[in-house]
View 1 (tube, rainbow, N blue to C red):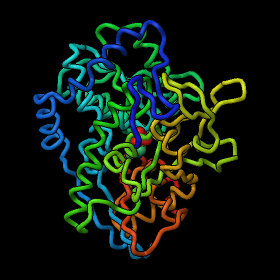
View 2 (view 1 turned 180 degrees about the vertical axis):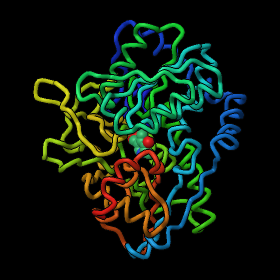
View 3 (view 1 turned 90 degrees about the horizontal axis):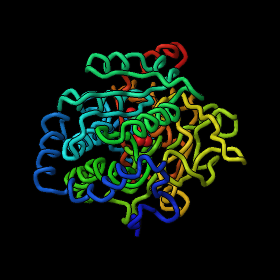
Length: 393
Ligand SMILES: *Cc1c(COP(=O)(O)O)cnc(C)c1O
């Protein structure tokens, strides 16, 4: 059984390693999140907004051409069709409702690809709350369209200029802000990372993905369970959502796809499950890329959303216990897969998602298998990167 312990651990991973200043905030969340999010009025508003604002349920699409190419049955769970273009909004809708219940007036968030920043700015606009987004200076450059979207939605975008100037540095800045503004501010973390209860909270909001998959697969195939679920893992929120209702169905193989960057051992990689060791990052004990004296190793991936030196504690647990299989895909192979999906299915995926598509080449399966790939987001935000490769692929 995959189960969260009372103090927020999956096996030996998780917990809440936080500075004393944040203790009241985190404690308040720990003590109230379950009763608040499962209250009838909360659930009603959450599902109403998911339906009419986000556009759920997202389709489970039988990708016939991709299936023919790999001689297997492949369904794509179309999170790319969510309002704002990725799964991230499932979580921000839930957390903004929670922030309102907690009487918070000010929202902060970190963002990598900008998808979480856009999803947060969107729900803040909808609910009329102040919104401050921290984003690495490098990511601000490579994800310019999303920066413009956040600003248009009324958010303030603050550039994180320390370290590799990417997601981890933006997260550090957001945590610093929260320490300085503990009373009126809610921190909307964008993935299944951070101190307990965030990994569980975000997984529960994203679990609508596998909740829908069960019904949709039953209708399409006569079975609720696929044989494999493939999802890319940055922090791991889209994967957690796609796995959630299958975690204890051991006949369903869970495939976690990480970014190998320029190669797992190239020194420019984000393959945390291979390169990582146990340690503490951003409030939880998990696998992370670090030197022998505990300094974070700068990660690299062509996709900003996977460019993170840790993984959520749930995934560290699933992978180290063998429940999930980790696969890593290079920048180049992700690009290839993005162009291939665009040409044969007419769907331009996010660069993050393209890693999950390529995993079809890296794992073995039977031709009778039913595979669901979680199509976490659309590729509009990555067009600047794709344009550089139009002649190559
Ligand atoms: C943010 C993002 C990811 C990575 O985040 P997870 O928490 O691992 O899901 C993957 N795909 C897309 C499209 C994203 O925007």
